[in-house]
Image (cartoon, rainbow, N blue to C red):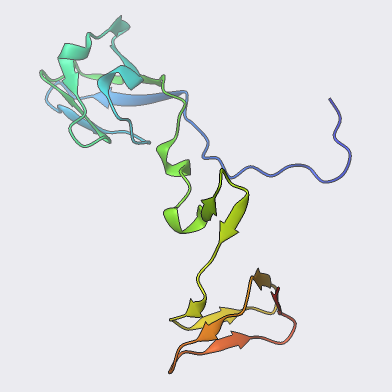
Length: 149
């Protein structure tokens, strides 16, 4: 379907479909390209044989650890990522805002207690009145805009 206007941009991380490792016959740990939360989030095969999840662990979310060293071979260990949810995309608490009455009202603080700079390339707004605490600087650089409603 064609898009009118600017192409949408995506901030999502690309998800590797398959990651390959070379077995050495002695190495038991391999570093995954992305964090997974459980052994069920990946499908692992060695020499074409799918491994039972009891054959490996992921103790810290990024280290694939086999209970026995996989056989030696070039690209003989395959890790297929099954979980398509990327936990790194969660919204930071500071960006969630404070809402009341089912989202009808958004609230904000009435005082600025740390230095704030509105850059020349930024527009900002807040609901006032606001108080700038003693010793704190509110700077609006030339070209930047601050609207207090």
